[in-house]
Length: 64
Image (cartoon, rainbow, N blue to C red):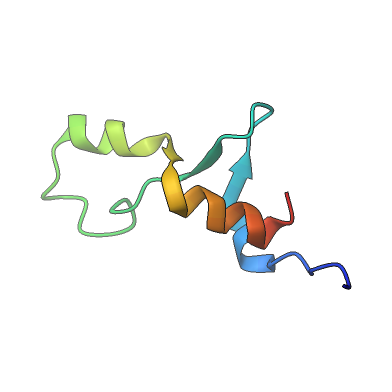
């Protein structure tokens, strides 16, 4: 069976840590920011850890 190609869009949006955790940027951080509180925007600023089936699917797309 041939090797799977890495999905380019996933590669740009997702990082896999050394321990194998899948990290991605938080949603809801692009527009309509004036109605969101400062604390909420700060919480959304970092990366979030994806778990369960989401992380398994993304690892398959990345070939990890």
